[in-house]
Length: 603
Image (cartoon, rainbow, N blue to C red; front, side):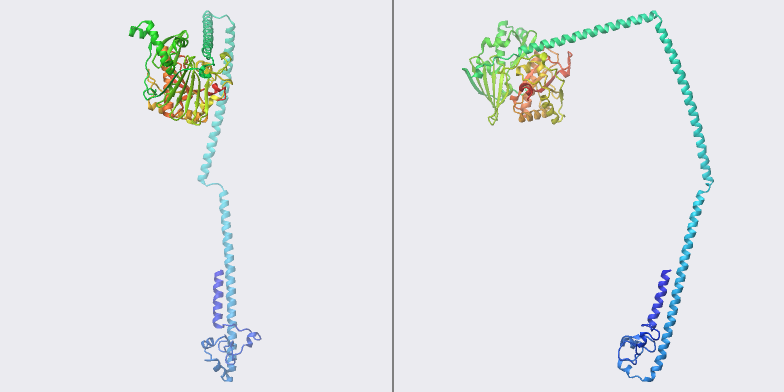
């Protein structure tokens, strides 16, 4: 509708613009004062024929007026009445056009009103239709919907029937349960009544058998307790004997005090002299075997044992310690096996291994200087190729008493010192060691391994121990955690560590090296253990050599300072699994950080 009005109004305006460029006002308006073009000397002027206001010469020429402004001024005055008549006609035509425009406007308004009414009617009709559809939806459903409602009603009825049946079944189950309970009560009552009556002959025999079984179980339990007490007593006795054997030598040694030097030797270790982790273990020969095989008399064999014993002590043997020192070494015992590098001595049914504790220090190119004093004590200085020095003090029996590292910057680090006084060990007063064992595998995270090494700081007794006490008293050594080296698997009767097996020790080697770099005074005990297969003396020598191979591999492959490691074999004396025979878990090497024990819990 609006578009129609616009078109009509535009048409009227166009007609008005063509018919009267300047609409003529009614008589008396300002337009009556505009002079006719043939009377005026200037524009604007009123064109007589069309009644249009002319504003330029070109517009006048288009309307057919005078050719120029001057020619229009010279016309005869007699044309004035005609021009006035034309003006009147133009005025009438203008009024007619205005009426037509008014009519068109009224028609457009009527059409707009009609369109509005039609739109209202259509909207009303649409509303009514929507209302009818809404009412239809509220009316009863169609035949299909009715069937669905019927089916739903049927389903509800069936569900209600099932629910009623389930309720009936539940009630019946409750009734049966109540009946069963009553029956059980009756049977229990009958059983109680029967129990109160005298037992039958069969029941009496069963009771007698049960009583006998109970007595046998009590006897076995009592026997097990007695055996446990005996084992505990043996362990305490063994610990006391270990503590007695671990008594330290007097500390007033000439090697410490600076007495008279009776022998001085210096040499450089060659490749052939240095021992390696890949070196084969020499199977020891027993005393009886040597006599049978060689046909030598007992005295000659004992002399050979003495020489082997001195040779096992390394440079100390060269000082000619004599029978006195050898007697103290044997201490009433006798040599039962030797490999040329270590000797096993038996004393009262127990074994101990004697060897050169400086073997780890004697690396190719190292310079070894040994001073022997009048009392038989020695002072050995090993200068490594990197310039570091290790000073070791030994007693006349060859026992290592003190070790000091001198670093590149001339700092002196005391690793252990058995020349000073240490309190005797009362094994009964020691705290029960916690079972802190860490199984090592090559896949273990190095950080976890470092934490295991550092765990020795926790729970250690707040007193110090000598190295001898730590090595030979199990109850002392076990006060710190142990790292079991399952990654090392020695072949039968072998102490060789192959390069592939050495690689499995990489994480342990780096962790130990880092620990020593942080604390140059750290000391690690490398242990060797075997099962019970084979002679005890042989197992002791083999376990000690295997522990030495582990320490050598850690030094050769991963630069762990050898001075910071102590090697000790225990043979079959410390079984992980208390069972005789070929037990893999008992054949093992292990490492402990014994620094807290040496330093009194401050390691």
